[in-house]
Image 1 (cartoon, helix red, strand yellow):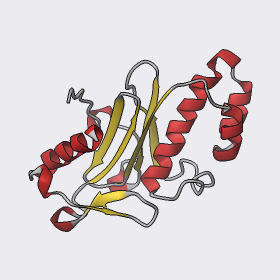
Image 2 (image 1 turned 90 degrees about the vertical axis):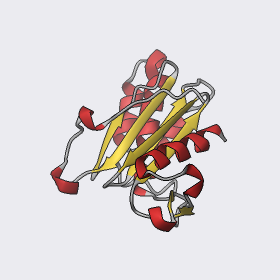
Image 3 (image 1 turned 30 degrees about the horizontal axis):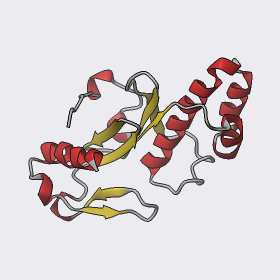
Length: 172
């Protein structure tokens, strides 16, 4: 898969090693991590949808990312009631019908990024919300919703600093 090859390239750049030298392990709920000599040196997460992939990398804290192609083939309110918190459902119910799909996906990717950051099983993340995490939207292009989440409280960083985030377009 192209996104996984790109992930290997990105991680090898951060670690100063060859992409083929990297080994991966899977956590108890399926979140991948680096194994072997690179274990614990960087935290990462990958998400892809349609023609877009999003990779999050951090040297000192857990990270989660999610990207979704916005599409109108779902029952947004049923999914929101099943997986999202009361605040998100209330805001979706109050949103203009023509904006509801876009807003749903914005809430959804934030929720998924938070779950992936925590490394918990799907269905377990609704209760925790975004507490203890910094969750921000990411602009990845028209027709997509994306977000990243990082654990806060490490070295006193409690808010998003745009200088800490980089964005690269990769044409593989």
